[in-house]
Structure formats: structure tokens, C-alpha cells
Length: 159
Image 1 (cartoon, one colour):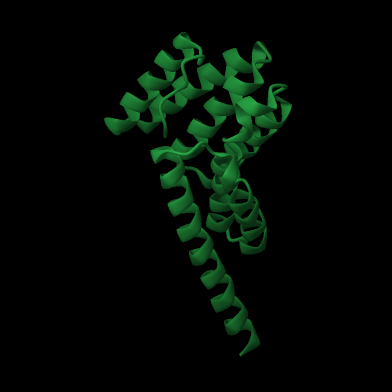
Image 2: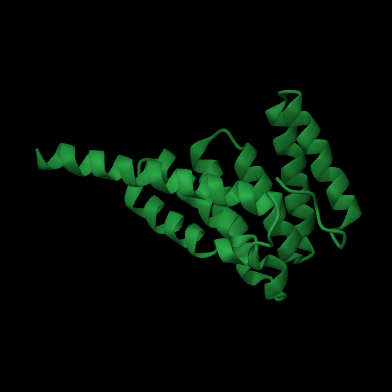
């Protein structure tokens, strides 16, 4: 994850930092409670941008695959609802990549590839820098792995 931009809500940043600390200490259940609380606050305020960030971070941390997918879908929905499109443009590659990962983990490789290709298509929207470099590298590796899994699957069903 990258550092929060200067205009990011400082109270929410502190809350997300709290969850990050819990995750670092291995307390995933406590971190998920913090994410749920932040989700409730941001969605009640119809703060779509911040709700998207919360759901994105919760989706990364969530160990249950079905709930992970739900968080990732919620993150995308909230980003789509954000009126300031420039504010979220650079976020889409990560959102789509996490959805691809969720679908792949659930065994839906074709849907995973569709989202992975969307992730690739949004890479140019990320501002240059170390965060972009990490996302580009990870997205390229994940795309290659996913295509290889699909090729293996197709070869196994053809033979």
C-alpha cells in the first residue's frame, strides 16, 4: 500500500493505521473489526472515495475468500460512485487486480482474467513513482501466472 495522500481524512488514516498495526501483529480478527467500523462510518456519510479505500484494505486483509471477494466488489462499487474521477483514476488497477485475485482463488479463472486485463488497461492511470512500479510489476506477474493457469486448465480438458 502507498501512503495516504495529503488530502486524505486524518481521522480515517489513523483508524487504518491502527488496523495495519493489528495486521502486523498478526491480529487479523481485530483488524477486520476496525475495518468494519471504518466502513460503517464512511458508507453512512456516503463518502465513496474513503469507503472504497477502506473496502480495498479490508479486502487485502480478509482471510475468508467469499468475504474477500465481497470487500473487493464493494471497493470497486464505491470507487465507481466517487464523483471526483481524478481522485480514483489511479486506484482502478489495484481494484481490478484484487478482484482478479479473488476470482482466481475461488476458481473462476475466466472472470479473473477479465479483471486482470482491466487492471493492465488502467496501469497508465497511476502516477509515476515507486507505488506505480510495484503495481506494474505485480500486475504483469499476476497476468502471466493467470494465463499459464488457464493454458494448463485448457490443455488438461482438451487431452
